[in-house]
Image 1: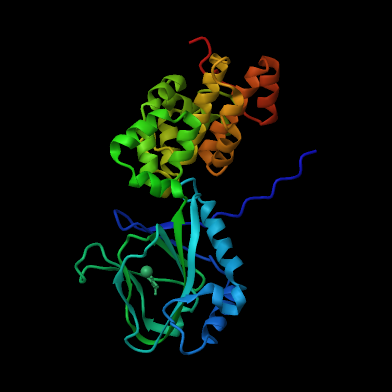
Image 2: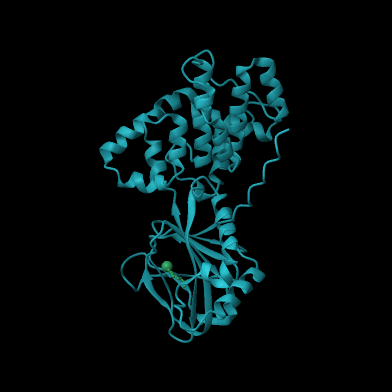
Length: 362
Ligand SMILES: O=C(O)CCC(=O)C(=O)O
Ligand SMILES: [Fe+2]
Protein backbone atom coordinates (compact mmCIF):
# COMPACT_ATOMS: atom_id res chain seq x y z
CA UNK A 1 0.00 0.00 0.00
CA UNK A 2 1.31 3.50 -0.75
CA UNK A 3 2.23 5.51 2.37
CA UNK A 4 -0.48 7.99 3.47
CA UNK A 5 0.15 11.49 2.12
CA UNK A 6 1.00 14.19 4.68
CA UNK A 7 -1.96 16.52 4.95
CA UNK A 8 -1.30 19.99 3.52
CA UNK A 9 -1.07 22.92 5.96
CA UNK A 10 -4.32 24.83 6.51
CA UNK A 11 -4.31 27.90 4.25
CA UNK A 12 -4.15 31.35 5.81
CA UNK A 13 -7.49 33.08 5.39
CA UNK A 14 -6.92 36.38 3.58
CA UNK A 15 -9.29 39.30 3.36
CA UNK A 16 -8.57 42.15 1.02
CA UNK A 17 -7.82 45.50 2.64
CA UNK A 18 -6.75 47.59 -0.32
CA UNK A 19 -7.18 47.09 -4.04
CA UNK A 20 -5.70 48.55 -7.20
CA UNK A 21 -1.93 48.66 -7.45
CA UNK A 22 -1.50 48.80 -3.66
CA UNK A 23 -2.84 45.31 -2.98
CA UNK A 24 -2.87 44.60 0.77
CA UNK A 25 -4.60 41.83 2.66
CA UNK A 26 -5.29 41.11 6.33
CA UNK A 27 -5.23 37.71 8.02
CA UNK A 28 -6.03 37.06 11.66
CA UNK A 29 -4.49 34.42 13.95
CA UNK A 30 -1.41 33.87 11.83
CA UNK A 31 0.58 33.34 15.06
CA UNK A 32 -0.80 32.25 18.41
CA UNK A 33 -0.47 34.69 21.36
CA UNK A 34 2.06 32.33 22.97
CA UNK A 35 4.21 32.20 19.78
CA UNK A 36 4.12 36.03 19.68
CA UNK A 37 5.11 36.20 23.34
CA UNK A 38 8.09 33.85 22.82
CA UNK A 39 9.46 35.88 19.89
CA UNK A 40 8.75 39.15 21.70
CA UNK A 41 10.71 38.14 24.78
CA UNK A 42 13.64 37.11 22.55
CA UNK A 43 13.50 40.55 20.89
CA UNK A 44 13.43 42.29 24.25
CA UNK A 45 16.43 40.37 25.48
CA UNK A 46 18.52 41.18 22.36
CA UNK A 47 21.62 43.24 23.20
CA UNK A 48 20.98 46.99 23.24
CA UNK A 49 23.67 47.70 20.64
CA UNK A 50 22.11 45.63 17.79
CA UNK A 51 19.90 47.22 15.13
CA UNK A 52 16.36 46.96 16.51
CA UNK A 53 14.96 47.84 13.08
CA UNK A 54 16.19 44.60 11.55
CA UNK A 55 16.72 41.88 14.13
CA UNK A 56 17.31 38.75 12.01
CA UNK A 57 15.12 35.90 13.25
CA UNK A 58 18.05 33.47 12.98
CA UNK A 59 19.92 35.46 15.65
CA UNK A 60 17.09 35.20 18.22
CA UNK A 61 17.08 32.21 20.60
CA UNK A 62 19.60 30.46 18.33
CA UNK A 63 17.14 30.38 15.41
CA UNK A 64 14.46 28.54 17.42
CA UNK A 65 11.66 30.62 15.83
CA UNK A 66 12.62 30.03 12.19
CA UNK A 67 10.33 26.96 11.91
CA UNK A 68 7.44 29.17 13.12
CA UNK A 69 8.15 31.61 10.28
CA UNK A 70 8.46 28.76 7.76
CA UNK A 71 5.11 27.42 8.91
CA UNK A 72 3.50 30.81 8.21
CA UNK A 73 4.99 30.73 4.70
CA UNK A 74 3.74 27.15 4.15
CA UNK A 75 0.24 28.22 5.14
CA UNK A 76 0.42 31.20 2.79
CA UNK A 77 1.66 28.96 -0.04
CA UNK A 78 -1.45 26.82 0.47
CA UNK A 79 -3.78 29.77 -0.29
CA UNK A 80 -3.69 29.49 -4.09
CA UNK A 81 -1.48 28.61 -7.04
CA UNK A 82 -0.60 32.31 -7.18
CA UNK A 83 0.94 32.08 -3.69
CA UNK A 84 2.37 28.58 -4.09
CA UNK A 85 5.73 29.67 -5.49
CA UNK A 86 6.55 32.15 -2.72
CA UNK A 87 9.74 31.39 -0.79
CA UNK A 88 11.08 32.86 2.45
CA UNK A 89 13.97 35.17 1.67
CA UNK A 90 14.47 37.01 5.00
CA UNK A 91 12.76 36.97 8.39
CA UNK A 92 13.40 39.69 10.93
CA UNK A 93 11.78 41.59 13.78
CA UNK A 94 11.29 45.32 14.03
CA UNK A 95 10.95 47.06 17.37
CA UNK A 96 9.93 50.67 17.92
CA UNK A 97 9.78 52.31 21.33
CA UNK A 98 8.88 55.74 22.54
CA UNK A 99 7.41 58.85 20.96
CA UNK A 100 8.37 59.59 17.37
CA UNK A 101 9.84 56.15 16.55
CA UNK A 102 8.62 55.07 13.10
CA UNK A 103 9.72 54.00 9.64
CA UNK A 104 9.64 56.37 6.65
CA UNK A 105 7.75 55.42 3.46
CA UNK A 106 9.58 52.82 1.37
CA UNK A 107 9.16 49.71 -0.76
CA UNK A 108 10.51 46.33 0.32
CA UNK A 109 13.15 44.58 -1.82
CA UNK A 110 11.05 41.45 -2.25
CA UNK A 111 8.00 40.17 -4.14
CA UNK A 112 5.71 39.87 -1.13
CA UNK A 113 5.78 40.91 2.55
CA UNK A 114 4.07 39.35 5.57
CA UNK A 115 3.99 41.64 8.60
CA UNK A 116 2.80 40.01 11.84
CA UNK A 117 1.99 42.09 14.95
CA UNK A 118 3.79 40.72 18.03
CA UNK A 119 2.53 43.37 20.47
CA UNK A 120 -1.13 43.93 21.40
CA UNK A 121 -2.57 47.22 20.17
CA UNK A 122 -3.03 48.29 23.81
CA UNK A 123 0.77 48.43 24.26
CA UNK A 124 1.24 51.50 22.06
CA UNK A 125 -0.44 54.51 20.48
CA UNK A 126 0.19 55.68 16.90
CA UNK A 127 2.45 53.31 14.99
CA UNK A 128 -0.05 52.11 12.36
CA UNK A 129 1.19 50.52 9.19
CA UNK A 130 0.29 52.96 6.39
CA UNK A 131 0.15 52.51 2.62
CA UNK A 132 0.89 55.35 0.22
CA UNK A 133 -0.78 55.21 -3.17
CA UNK A 134 1.57 57.75 -4.71
CA UNK A 135 4.85 59.48 -3.99
CA UNK A 136 2.84 62.23 -2.27
CA UNK A 137 3.37 61.78 1.46
CA UNK A 138 -0.03 63.24 2.38
CA UNK A 139 -2.12 60.48 0.80
CA UNK A 140 -2.07 57.30 2.86
CA UNK A 141 -4.25 54.47 4.16
CA UNK A 142 -3.58 53.33 7.71
CA UNK A 143 -4.43 49.75 8.54
CA UNK A 144 -5.08 48.31 11.98
CA UNK A 145 -3.10 45.32 13.14
CA UNK A 146 -4.20 42.88 15.85
CA UNK A 147 -1.92 40.67 17.98
CA UNK A 148 -0.87 37.59 15.99
CA UNK A 149 -2.58 38.93 12.86
CA UNK A 150 -0.77 39.80 9.65
CA UNK A 151 -0.92 42.47 7.01
CA UNK A 152 0.29 41.08 3.68
CA UNK A 153 1.29 43.23 0.75
CA UNK A 154 3.30 43.29 -2.45
CA UNK A 155 6.87 44.36 -1.69
CA UNK A 156 6.39 47.08 -4.30
CA UNK A 157 3.50 48.69 -2.38
CA UNK A 158 4.86 51.86 -0.75
CA UNK A 159 4.36 51.72 3.01
CA UNK A 160 5.53 53.22 6.29
CA UNK A 161 5.24 52.72 10.04
CA UNK A 162 3.56 55.84 11.42
CA UNK A 163 5.64 57.29 14.33
CA UNK A 164 4.57 56.05 17.78
CA UNK A 165 2.97 58.47 20.23
CA UNK A 166 3.98 56.21 23.11
CA UNK A 167 4.65 52.60 24.09
CA UNK A 168 6.38 49.76 22.31
CA UNK A 169 5.51 48.10 19.01
CA UNK A 170 7.16 44.97 17.70
CA UNK A 171 6.48 43.07 14.46
CA UNK A 172 7.76 39.99 12.69
CA UNK A 173 8.48 40.77 9.03
CA UNK A 174 8.83 38.06 6.39
CA UNK A 175 10.20 39.02 2.99
CA UNK A 176 9.26 36.51 0.32
CA UNK A 177 10.42 36.01 -3.24
CA UNK A 178 9.07 33.97 -6.07
CA UNK A 179 10.71 30.94 -7.59
CA UNK A 180 13.37 31.95 -10.13
CA UNK A 181 11.00 31.38 -13.07
CA UNK A 182 9.28 34.72 -12.56
CA UNK A 183 12.42 36.84 -12.35
CA UNK A 184 14.11 35.11 -15.29
CA UNK A 185 10.94 35.62 -17.32
CA UNK A 186 10.62 39.30 -16.54
CA UNK A 187 14.25 39.86 -17.60
CA UNK A 188 13.67 38.34 -21.04
CA UNK A 189 13.01 40.62 -24.06
CA UNK A 190 9.39 40.39 -25.34
CA UNK A 191 10.36 38.77 -28.65
CA UNK A 192 12.16 35.96 -26.82
CA UNK A 193 9.24 35.59 -24.40
CA UNK A 194 6.85 35.17 -27.33
CA UNK A 195 9.11 32.51 -28.90
CA UNK A 196 9.40 30.59 -25.62
CA UNK A 197 5.67 30.73 -24.98
CA UNK A 198 4.95 29.10 -28.31
CA UNK A 199 7.26 26.22 -27.42
CA UNK A 200 5.63 25.26 -24.12
CA UNK A 201 3.22 22.35 -23.99
CA UNK A 202 0.04 22.82 -21.97
CA UNK A 203 1.26 21.28 -18.73
CA UNK A 204 4.49 23.34 -18.83
CA UNK A 205 2.39 26.38 -19.58
CA UNK A 206 0.23 25.77 -16.51
CA UNK A 207 3.31 25.39 -14.29
CA UNK A 208 4.77 28.55 -15.77
CA UNK A 209 1.48 30.39 -15.15
CA UNK A 210 1.75 29.67 -11.42
CA UNK A 211 5.07 31.53 -11.08
CA UNK A 212 3.66 35.06 -10.91
CA UNK A 213 0.81 37.26 -11.92
CA UNK A 214 2.50 38.52 -15.06
CA UNK A 215 3.50 34.95 -16.02
CA UNK A 216 -0.17 33.98 -15.60
CA UNK A 217 -1.29 36.81 -17.85
CA UNK A 218 1.30 35.95 -20.48
CA UNK A 219 0.39 32.25 -20.29
CA UNK A 220 -3.28 33.07 -20.78
CA UNK A 221 -2.39 34.94 -23.99
CA UNK A 222 -0.36 32.03 -25.41
CA UNK A 223 -1.52 30.74 -28.81
CA UNK A 224 -1.89 27.22 -27.39
CA UNK A 225 -5.08 28.47 -25.78
CA UNK A 226 -6.80 28.33 -29.14
CA UNK A 227 -6.51 24.53 -29.23
CA UNK A 228 -7.38 24.35 -25.54
CA UNK A 229 -10.58 26.31 -26.09
CA UNK A 230 -11.53 24.10 -29.01
CA UNK A 231 -10.85 21.00 -26.92
CA UNK A 232 -13.08 22.22 -24.12
CA UNK A 233 -16.05 22.85 -26.37
CA UNK A 234 -16.79 25.51 -25.03
CA UNK A 235 -15.25 26.05 -21.59
CA UNK A 236 -18.21 27.95 -20.19
CA UNK A 237 -20.60 25.09 -20.68
CA UNK A 238 -18.03 22.64 -19.44
CA UNK A 239 -17.46 24.59 -16.28
CA UNK A 240 -21.15 25.03 -15.60
CA UNK A 241 -21.53 21.26 -15.93
CA UNK A 242 -18.50 20.48 -13.84
CA UNK A 243 -19.66 22.80 -11.11
CA UNK A 244 -23.14 21.33 -11.29
CA UNK A 245 -21.91 17.81 -10.70
CA UNK A 246 -20.86 18.56 -7.14
CA UNK A 247 -24.17 19.65 -5.77
CA UNK A 248 -26.69 18.18 -8.10
CA UNK A 249 -27.39 14.48 -8.05
CA UNK A 250 -29.37 14.58 -11.26
CA UNK A 251 -26.16 14.86 -13.24
CA UNK A 252 -25.70 17.29 -16.11
CA UNK A 253 -27.54 20.49 -16.55
CA UNK A 254 -28.45 21.02 -12.89
CA UNK A 255 -26.79 24.40 -12.75
CA UNK A 256 -27.22 27.13 -15.30
CA UNK A 257 -24.26 29.02 -16.64
CA UNK A 258 -25.52 32.09 -14.82
CA UNK A 259 -25.51 30.21 -11.52
CA UNK A 260 -22.02 28.85 -12.22
CA UNK A 261 -20.85 32.40 -12.89
CA UNK A 262 -22.40 33.59 -9.62
CA UNK A 263 -20.63 30.86 -7.66
CA UNK A 264 -17.35 31.51 -9.38
CA UNK A 265 -17.66 35.18 -8.55
CA UNK A 266 -17.76 34.16 -4.89
CA UNK A 267 -14.25 32.66 -5.15
CA UNK A 268 -11.66 34.76 -3.26
CA UNK A 269 -10.72 37.69 -5.43
CA UNK A 270 -6.99 37.21 -5.05
CA UNK A 271 -7.29 33.82 -6.71
CA UNK A 272 -8.99 35.32 -9.77
CA UNK A 273 -6.64 37.20 -11.97
CA UNK A 274 -6.36 35.34 -15.23
CA UNK A 275 -8.17 36.90 -18.17
CA UNK A 276 -10.15 33.86 -19.30
CA UNK A 277 -13.77 33.70 -20.47
CA UNK A 278 -14.80 33.00 -16.87
CA UNK A 279 -13.05 34.31 -13.75
CA UNK A 280 -11.20 31.05 -13.18
CA UNK A 281 -8.67 30.68 -10.44
CA UNK A 282 -5.18 29.68 -11.48
CA UNK A 283 -5.74 26.27 -9.98
CA UNK A 284 -8.81 25.84 -12.14
CA UNK A 285 -6.80 27.01 -15.11
CA UNK A 286 -4.11 24.41 -14.43
CA UNK A 287 -6.72 21.68 -14.14
CA UNK A 288 -8.38 22.81 -17.35
CA UNK A 289 -5.03 22.63 -19.09
CA UNK A 290 -4.59 19.11 -17.81
CA UNK A 291 -8.09 18.22 -18.88
CA UNK A 292 -7.45 19.53 -22.36
CA UNK A 293 -4.19 17.60 -22.49
CA UNK A 294 -6.01 14.45 -21.38
CA UNK A 295 -8.60 14.94 -24.09
CA UNK A 296 -5.80 15.41 -26.54
CA UNK A 297 -4.16 12.19 -25.37
CA UNK A 298 -7.42 10.29 -25.73
CA UNK A 299 -7.93 11.50 -29.25
CA UNK A 300 -4.35 11.16 -30.43
CA UNK A 301 -2.78 8.49 -28.22
CA UNK A 302 0.14 8.08 -30.59
CA UNK A 303 1.18 11.73 -30.16
CA UNK A 304 0.74 12.48 -26.47
CA UNK A 305 2.00 9.89 -24.01
CA UNK A 306 0.14 10.07 -20.66
CA UNK A 307 3.41 10.36 -18.73
CA UNK A 308 4.09 13.67 -20.50
CA UNK A 309 0.95 15.24 -19.12
CA UNK A 310 1.92 15.68 -15.49
CA UNK A 311 -1.67 15.23 -14.41
CA UNK A 312 -0.62 14.42 -10.86
CA UNK A 313 0.95 17.86 -10.50
CA UNK A 314 -2.10 19.55 -12.01
CA UNK A 315 -4.35 17.65 -9.64
CA UNK A 316 -2.20 18.66 -6.65
CA UNK A 317 -2.61 22.31 -7.66
CA UNK A 318 -6.28 21.79 -8.39
CA UNK A 319 -6.93 20.31 -4.95
CA UNK A 320 -6.59 23.82 -3.53
CA UNK A 321 -9.57 25.19 -5.44
CA UNK A 322 -13.18 24.25 -4.93
CA UNK A 323 -13.97 24.83 -8.58
CA UNK A 324 -10.90 23.09 -9.87
CA UNK A 325 -11.43 20.00 -7.75
CA UNK A 326 -14.59 19.39 -9.78
CA UNK A 327 -12.54 19.78 -12.94
CA UNK A 328 -9.86 17.46 -11.57
CA UNK A 329 -12.53 14.80 -10.99
CA UNK A 330 -13.42 15.19 -14.64
CA UNK A 331 -9.76 14.71 -15.55
CA UNK A 332 -9.81 11.45 -13.60
CA UNK A 333 -12.95 10.43 -15.49
CA UNK A 334 -11.22 11.23 -18.77
CA UNK A 335 -8.25 9.10 -17.75
CA UNK A 336 -10.56 6.26 -16.78
CA UNK A 337 -12.25 6.55 -20.17
CA UNK A 338 -8.96 5.44 -21.67
CA UNK A 339 -9.41 2.10 -19.94
CA UNK A 340 -12.92 1.55 -21.28
CA UNK A 341 -16.37 2.84 -20.46
CA UNK A 342 -17.02 0.30 -17.63
CA UNK A 343 -13.91 1.38 -15.76
CA UNK A 344 -14.78 4.97 -16.52
CA UNK A 345 -18.18 4.77 -14.84
CA UNK A 346 -16.74 2.83 -11.90
CA UNK A 347 -14.08 5.52 -11.38
CA UNK A 348 -16.69 8.23 -11.53
CA UNK A 349 -18.93 6.47 -9.05
CA UNK A 350 -16.03 5.96 -6.69
CA UNK A 351 -15.53 9.73 -6.66
CA UNK A 352 -19.24 10.38 -6.28
CA UNK A 353 -19.31 12.49 -9.38
CA UNK A 354 -20.69 12.38 -12.88
CA UNK A 355 -19.12 11.46 -16.16
CA UNK A 356 -19.57 13.77 -19.07
CA UNK A 357 -18.35 13.38 -22.56
CA UNK A 358 -15.08 15.19 -22.93
CA UNK A 359 -15.24 15.80 -26.63
CA UNK A 360 -14.96 12.37 -28.20
CA UNK A 361 -16.12 11.99 -31.76
CA UNK A 362 -15.22 15.55 -32.75
O1 LIG B 1 6.94 48.46 11.21
C1 LIG B 1 6.28 47.96 10.33
O2 LIG B 1 5.15 47.49 10.51
C2 LIG B 1 6.83 47.90 8.93
C3 LIG B 1 8.30 47.67 8.87
C4 LIG B 1 8.77 47.66 7.47
O3 LIG B 1 8.07 48.04 6.58
C5 LIG B 1 10.11 47.18 7.13
O4 LIG B 1 10.90 46.91 8.04
O5 LIG B 1 10.40 47.06 5.93
FE1 LIG C 1 8.82 47.58 4.73
